[in-house]
Length: 205
Image 1 (cartoon, helix red, strand yellow):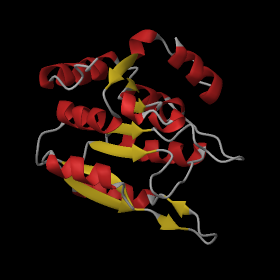
Image 2 (cartoon, rainbow, N blue to C red):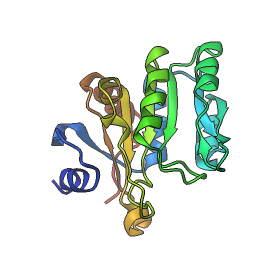
Image 3 (spheres, rainbow, N blue to C red):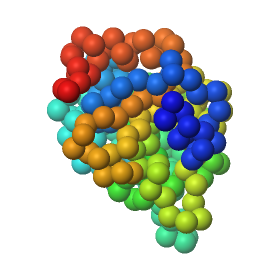
């Protein structure tokens, strides 16, 4: 109930119910569980660079291959996604899973709705599932608003694993407790089965 209220009040989310929410020991572990549920070691994964070192280490250590799509600065020094490069890399490497960091770590970009919409158009065109790390979504500077990836269109709603946690917001990392939001029941069942088989989400009271 607290998560639903928080997402509704902070992010304007509608239609979120308890069945869409699941416990995670941590966001990184959830990301790897989602990868393991829909890919096998050796598969390539698209990731924007500069890249959070936690992603780099976990993905490589789990046997996946990272394909970087570098962000580029515009004329005002703002980091932007290169949609043509994303599309090219997805096609060339036969990628069907991408990790999307929003807000971006380490660049600190709070993506605008139009930017996320364009990214999701690229992912949809390439039949790509999206793992969206939104752990920094509550820590945005004045004048910027976090747009949940799943909210921008129907494809994003049904093909995105979103991961959140109170750890950054309230400085509670030591308590160990994050959560996912997955609307598509098929994706959600596969994710939770992968976590159950590895005992990853057997919480340590």
